[in-house]
Length: 270
Image 1 (cartoon, rainbow, N blue to C red):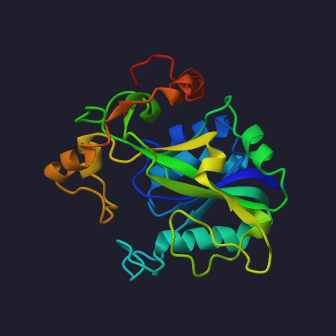
Image 2 (image 1 turned 180 degrees about the vertical axis):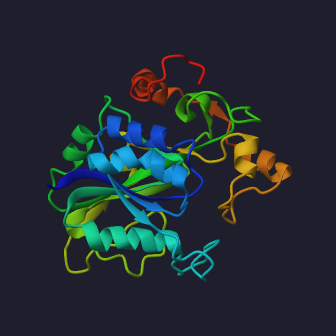
């Protein structure tokens, strides 16, 4: 069976967030996940087991690069373990899906028209030469939370920066190269001899990625997979959040009731 909308992601120390992230994206239209496990723990595997058995998740242990030169912060034109995971997904599965999203566990793709992504994506895909879509991404701050809140991620963090600051790409499988030399966490590489174009952020303004970048102070400072751009001290945390709580954005809150039902959460307090 060929999948229509898929996600490739690598994860580590994301156990409190995995189910919410999977169920949300399943709810808005994704039908398969290629997950690269850099956690290696029994708890993470236990969370994913029902999804693996259902056929929703393809699980790849991805600890073989730990402690090597591919582990740690990235630098220009170098493939780290994340880039290699995306390359594996592209080269191995590109004939098994129509579209694949390059996204992280702290990112949620939100349809801004209706409650489902498929009609939006299918409309953009009517031109057979559309090889990809550059989807706008906006960063959310800590919304005043010092400790991990009891609510879901998408209902707890509603303050964000004032304007779109980045993007992540969704790619059409038939146009994907092996991505063997890609060193981008945001963009896919495409086959050189297959003509096509990538839609710009302005052309896909009907979708947006919510990036819950820092979450609370405690969650941010306890992260084990810090990048060079992530704060590692409380001072750096507050400096980074200085512009990430500029405006309120309730757009995604309309998905909270159904998501809570899917997660078996009846009481607003987790």
